[in-house]
Length: 102
Image 1 (cartoon, rainbow, N blue to C red):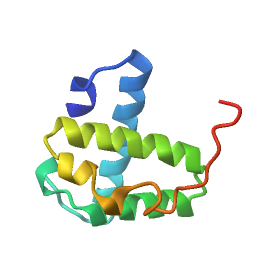
Image 2 (cartoon, rainbow, N blue to C red):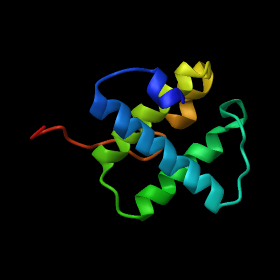
Image 3 (tube, rainbow, N blue to C red):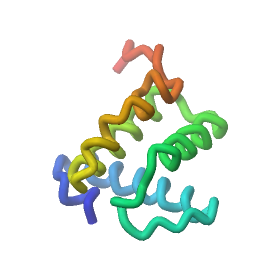
């Protein structure tokens, strides 16, 4: 499982695994049948983030989720997808969050 291979603390790996599981369940709910990370497209991630935003998830949480997704994509050899202009926090409407208090 790529989320575990990337490494990090136990909590980081656990959170990354949970985020990837949530992302996969989102794709399944939309009947998007992607069997391999190589077949993922920007529109799949955009759809996931839009769904999370409509669910009322905080912007900082979505920053963390995108960071986890990018890390897994890079580990899978999908650097181009991870660094896509369409998937920047600004392009996804996730800019402007404050780290004050963290």
